[in-house]
Length: 321
Ligand code: ZN
Image (cartoon, rainbow, N blue to C red):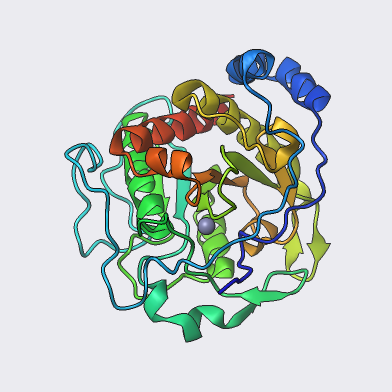
């Protein structure tokens, strides 16, 4: 069953051209040097693809079953394992010192492993400023049943450990400890109420086989209803460009070959989680779960650690200025 969820709508028409990427790199040379290097030497053969992000339903993870995990010995995040009863927005073990001392980062693990069992609740419409949209979606999965919701939580745990080592205070929007959601508007509110210095929403895409690579989604300028992204557009772009540059360097993954014209950046105004944010925020689609080559990366604990390191590097760069 095809569906269109909060993070799977057809992206906005391509806006970011390579020249803009290079121009941005000139502004943030340290952050994007690796990216530009990639652009210069990488395989860009997929550029100019259809841009179609048709999504298949996560049929491999039906309700009532425990999704198969590609569990390996390197599958668990380093450091202490979060307790099962931890609350979604709890702050765990803030570091006493470090370059990010006093900084608050909210990590938004996309979807929820239990959304499959609560379709009525997550299909409820919420106001995202521009229009009304589903509260949340189930997310996608690999063809072998490794769910996006599992992926996002795993990367989130790894990312939290890395950021706490830098002294940051880290909060989650959910930690798999609630039965569904939160809705996209609540996810935004959690970042806002925390007064976050940066928010990153972690996802993996569900595009067609052959569509590969990551992309970072930036908030477009929206002023409608409760949404006013004017103050966050520029800092969110800065955050997103730094994350994209760091992600390329650390993971070696290419920017998406199906959206963003090879820049790894896509700007959208249809995501409630971005529209309703009052603090710098981006999404990252770390890869395409429906492509077998990308799926091999996404199901690897070692690769997920690199993904977390790539995201962390961009956040640290952004927060240190
Ligand atoms: Zn997602």
